[in-house]
Amino acid sequence: MEIEINGRKIKLSNLEKIFWPASGYTKHDLLRYYIDVSSYLLPYLADRPIHFQRFPDGIEGKRFYQINAPSYAPSWVKTFPVQSKERVRNYMLVNDLETLVYVVNLACLEIHPWHSRITDINHPDYGIVDLDPQEGVGFKQVAHVAGVVKDVLDSLGLSGFPKTSGATGIQIYIPLRTGYTYEQVRDIVGFICAQVHKKEPHLTTMERMVKKRGATVYLDYLQNLWGKTINAPYTVRPVPGASVSTPLSWGEVCGGKVSPADFTITNIVDRVKEKGDLFAPVLSGGQSAATILRQIEK
Image 1 (cartoon, rainbow, N blue to C red):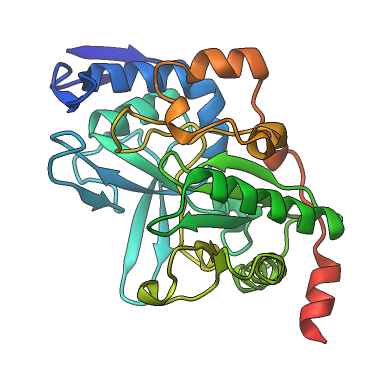
Image 2 (cartoon, rainbow, N blue to C red):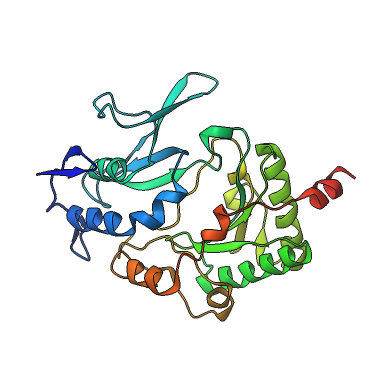
């Protein structure tokens, strides 16, 4: 099958292949969802190098990472070179619907943009507090810790915006003014996480060794390092039920009545039409973290 978008033709393949066996959702369902949600998703991908994970046989089949643009990609797929220690990697840019459809047809379920744009690749637009529950920790406990993060941010005069990871965790984005390096953003978020850990020393951890974390919520601030990526809002996760990484209101988080499984490819578009894009402030302007950096430097 071939589809034309904005004058560009894209060949679609294996549309009836089952990607979520328990639910029966197909590759066609995945493509339809991304087309329907594209106007909300694309602003979070635009001009950012993207790290993909592909699932050509669905979520229970083999998976592999896609960083470099494929050699057979259409000429209209834009790329951006990033120099690493070993090589130059040519990341794909997903700036428009036709490119989004192209990469989803490649079975790219995991869509992870960089925290910075190609116009200023060394300076992130936001920091992220990644709440990663360890074995034995439920989502209500994660939501409680997210509420503690909000309290810390409020005390620092900062705003944060939560979303489900789409799996078991919550990620809180903190929009920052341009100019902070990745190392500074790591330190800023690390400072915030340390304050959270002081308030909840038994429920949270900053321990890097997994086997030493126990039944806690890991406060992962190292996701803010150069080249690290996190799945974008409105992207689908390779978990049963086809759950979606979904922006939440703080009322939903602190109310304790939501679960990541509540938000799937079947209901997100209607939700955003009703509630609007709760994550929009993440892209509308940054905040100063100068007071935190001064405290770190003392």
